Image (cartoon, rainbow, N blue to C red; front, side, top):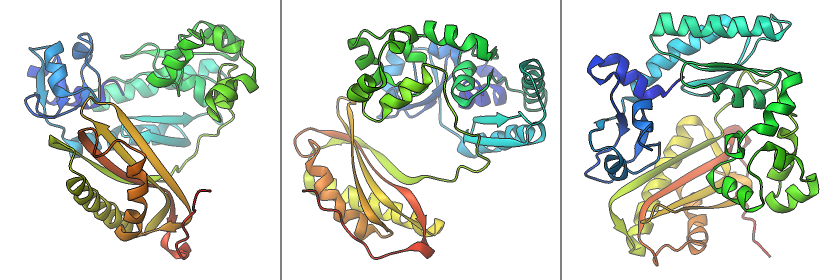
Length: 347
């Protein structure tokens, strides 16, 4: 979907149409941009930017609070159309999914017509535009879907893949974020052709396990299947403070509260997890995460909090002011598989 949250707001409120619209928190407080319209993006505004910074970029922008229930409602309508048009669907989020139509469409021409049909149905039945990418694997289809936004369709055939990837700016590669893009640039990698020149061992030396992923995708290789059910992989919560925090007692009280919220969510889902991740965002918006993985799942707030002190020690908490804290439990496992807690000690 194109600028999904903002597009829903513009659809429901015609007075917002054609205007820079930001879905997020209060620009006079410590709010963050959750989404923005394409009119707002022209001013350099993007998701995760502070609302205060966004208003400096575009003083006449309109701010609206998120309406999660409404977005879920629209998402269900869109996904219903997907389900009627494709036998295998892998949702990625409220507004994005992989559709495998290989069984019903034997060539790219047929697949392209199917994509146009789906886009037309979404527009006529829901009232919003969406963009699509058509190709022979998930990576290329994902990259293609971002090329001609908004309201676009891009097709990449197997014969075109090498030339397309060679010319693609490295920041447009799916899986290359801002930090990785900066490191790529430091290595002289500006586009796919530059990345292609590195050997697998070189990329693994520079990027660890991700190096193998980069080695494959720049060659157009991606054998991952479209999965009907992805399942939830993590449960977490975070909070942004009205004023920056540096006092360790206050920090620990906040983390205790967050761990209790995560534990309650785990209980509702009847699961536990083997990995705990602490997220810390400092006053200057720089963010770090610290994780610890166990050999057996944890389920309670007390078990989560056992790991937090050591994770905190690996941050600058207590030394630098903090604006956000978060806790996530991942690598989820069902309650019926619960085993005694075993802590892995580093040596």
